[in-house]
Image (cartoon, rainbow, N blue to C red; front, side, top):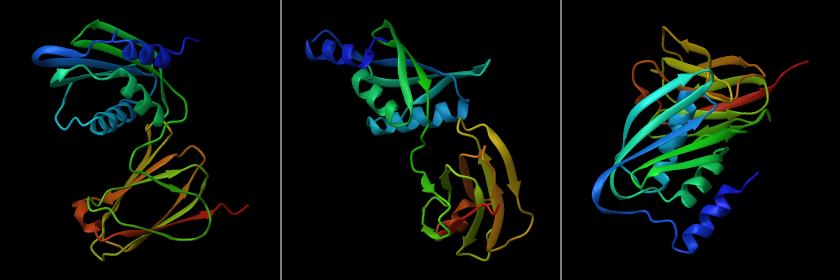
Length: 220
């Protein structure tokens, strides 16, 4: 397979990859991958943030036959540096398979997703030891690669649990929303679950003081 990243790096090193516009303009970039729209969007947003882009808009999202595409618009003086973009996407398990420059202000990136990774997730393995977490947003993402029994403790008596279970492509497998406040929940994590999102039904800030998570091995 042609190593597109190396080709791009060679072009850039030899001054054959112009990226600067004559004046600020709208840059449109379309990203395509065989995954869920949610995983694609979260990955794109993480990459753009890492590249220093604070403001961008989602112009279009499509999902058909397991293929997701998302078109982003950015007001800028430069096209995305594809050599940097390719490296950052690869960190999240997105490997570039095709890149089309329709014009300096219109690009298409196509990716193959192997083992996806999310930014700002906490890896959790069934060690039987509790882990203290603290996110000021009150939203917690767990990356779980082994089945087990998950126990979540809140440092607040006002917590009304909201928990979502996702597969590796961020297709939702199960959604739970408690009707009453509690300080502890427990649930089984099957082998299809890869990511878990923990928050609060009414106000995520209830959990800004932190949670404690414990993944216990499945008993055979």
